[in-house]
Structures are given as C-alpha cells and as structure tokens.
Length: 135
Image (cartoon, rainbow, N blue to C red; front, side, top):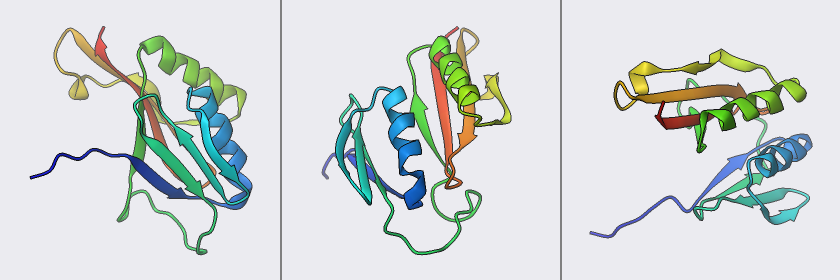
C-alpha cells in the first residue's frame, strides 16, 4: 500500500472567466504559481494547487450530475467566512442555499460548529467556504 494525498486539481473554465479565479484565490491567500493565456495555477499553504484551464470543449456543467459537486475551502474562523461573504457582496456574487449559516448536522458535537457560505462561479462551479471547529 502507498500513502497518497491530493496534490492538484484541474478545473476547466471559460477563457473570459480566468480573472474571476485569479482574484478569488488571491483574496483567499493563494499565490499565483503559473499563468499564461489559457492556464492559471494557484497554490495553497498546504501544498495543494488548483489549475484553471480554458482549453475546453463546449459542454455544460451540472453540479448535480456526474463529476465534482463543489470545491470546499476551509478557513480558520467564522469571521473568515463572514469576510468571504463581504467579498461576494462587493462582487455581486449571490450566496446560495440560504447561506451563510451554521449546519449543526455537519458539526462534530454540541460545542462545535460548521459555518458555511456557498456560491457559484461564472462557469457554474460550486464553491463552499467553511469554518469547522469550536463555537
């Protein structure tokens, strides 16, 4: 048996939406690792990298169908989720699914919380920003 971990993910996006991802991840503290006209790589402090590629086929994305449902970004505090909500408001990006909100069904116990906001990118990719930990 080997031990593995997620090192990177490639997400196919429309070319005109590349600035959206660069700005969103810069706001979340992910520096740009690589950038050219059709490819953007950003990296997290944990070593995970995301690669946004605009060389794609003209097909639609259905987050309730086969494939990725959403990409969750964990943050260190509830205040960070609230800061993300402010960023979304400033950029006219609606929060989805009655978020931000606490989700007791996902918390680890009565003294814990799972506080999230969910939103969709211009390419219909769902994102979740979540704090999970002590209340």
